[in-house]
Structure formats: structure tokens, C-alpha cells
Image (cartoon, rainbow, N blue to C red; front, side):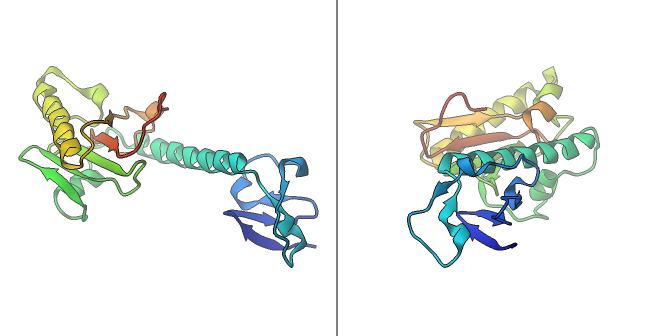
Length: 196
């Protein structure tokens, strides 16, 4: 008997043998002992089972991490290309964004995949070889300072000056997905340590 149900975001198929989970297709099969009975009965015999909350969170975090790594690998393949990046297109107003702050050398806009209530990206308007922090040279001192100062202005505008974090991902090992130097300004909730 093969049947399908979506319960708490996990698609379960072929409950007789617990053969596959759509979110788990790349992960080992979980034994029935990892499942917990659901209190509310239903018409479906398999609806009595649900993954524990900590298991669902782990599966979601693992899937997100794997997606981030895949995107970072694809981006790293073109890291040294001088082709326009997504951020160059945002600067040129070819792609819409929710701008928080802008001056002659810096642009700050909301991240489309926020990791905190406030998640703003701060970028230099001119790359000038700054695809990542690891490529910074002495001639970049001024823009690096301007980026950090802009992060402070963003935090002030967003009302998170008393507690925020600035993150710079550098290279594949840090899951950098756009090779145009950018700072993440995060806040609006209690941030945990260690972050990674």
C-alpha cells in the first residue's frame, strides 16, 4: 500500500515500510523508533506518526545548508569573472530592491532571504576588484571603512544599534554566494554564539 500525506512539512510515502521521505531523499532512512505517536487520530492510519520537532529542525537546517553549499559552489566557479553580478544589476536598478541607505559609494538594501528580523546587505557601488574580502588591497581601505560606517547607519535607521551583527562571508568555505563584497547587517532578535 502506497499512500502520501503532508504532515508538519514532511511528506511521508509508503508508511508500511517507511521507504522514503521527500525531504530525506538524500539521507538515510529513519527507523520507526524515531517517530512519535500523534495525539489526534485521523482517518489515515499513517497519520499517527510524526517526526519529533528536533528531528524536523535538523532536517530543515541540513537541507538549507546543503542548498547554500551548492549555490556557493556554483558561484565560486565564476568568482574571478568580471561579468556583472546580481548586485551590479541592483545598483543599476535593473533588479528592484528595498533600499535602506544609499550614498555616492555604498548601497544598502534588504536581503530577500532574511535570517533575522533585520537583515540588510551593504555593498560598494564599484567593485574595483573587491569580489571578496580576501582580495582587499591597501587601495581599498577607504571603501572598507565606508562599508562599516554604512553598517552602523543602517543599524541606527533600523533601530538595532544596541545589538546587531556584521557578517562578511569570504569564499567557498564561508558559503559566499555573490562575488561582490557585501556585509550582512543582522539584528532585531537575540543573536547566538557561535554563529556558524
